[in-house]
Image 1 (tube, rainbow, N blue to C red):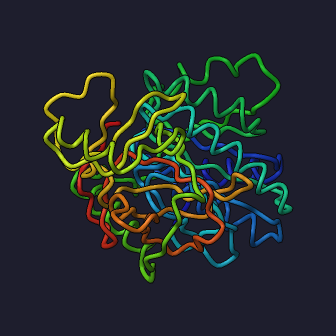
Image 2 (cartoon, helix red, strand yellow):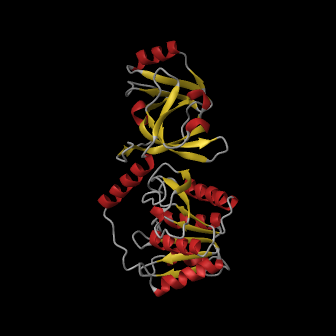
Image 3 (tube, helix red, strand yellow):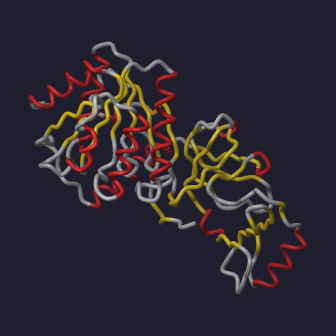
Length: 339
């Protein structure tokens, strides 16, 4: 594609400075396009370059609701042409309510990229640049320590975000205007893109069993206490008027998973089994790294194992990180989950 002179100049400066280049801007200004072109140029110059895609709603590297990592290639100018090389599970397609997880995930993948010998790191971001987005972007700068901050703006909409860096030595701020090819995408187009990326990730995935006694939950107070025996589950079911699949009591309180809405359950946190049906989850290994994303096929009934559809290898998974949406392997979103 034809690249404007100011984009050309910004890329030359970012490549010369090296380190981390963070690209920010509102929605539909060409952030991913800029990142793809910059990463390709770095790779073509022989620089080992990693790309982090933290736009969890419009992901180009890996599935939505995750931060994807890839290695730049000399022949690939688009981020969605790069094979997934690592990821961090956030669990939601909107950054709102998940800002800490986004920053923590970026910091973890930055460490991973440098441990694998990257010389240049390009970071794509969400289009949230107002309200909570200001704090999110400032936190990303603090966590990533970029040498270059590329701000793609139509007018001066990013200036409130850029104010803290006017008097600092780094990052160097490069202001550029959007690509003339950038076009606004409707909610329908964005939803179709998420479905495409989910479906691409889960192509070839298989159902794997993860024994309950081998894993813990992150984000839910489950498998942290002492499970109630079957006789007590039956007593609860009789009192509540609903089938009880699991109940436990421990430091996190009393938690139950039920097949419906109980009549009354004072003192209990009750989770509906429907929330676990095709729930998107993160699969975390013993070292804390994300093995992949998976689709949970409900709560275990009878056999004491979670069944998860995933392209990742589940044998080393030790933690299930809770997600906040339900999706099927074809990529269709089935609704959000409020825990």
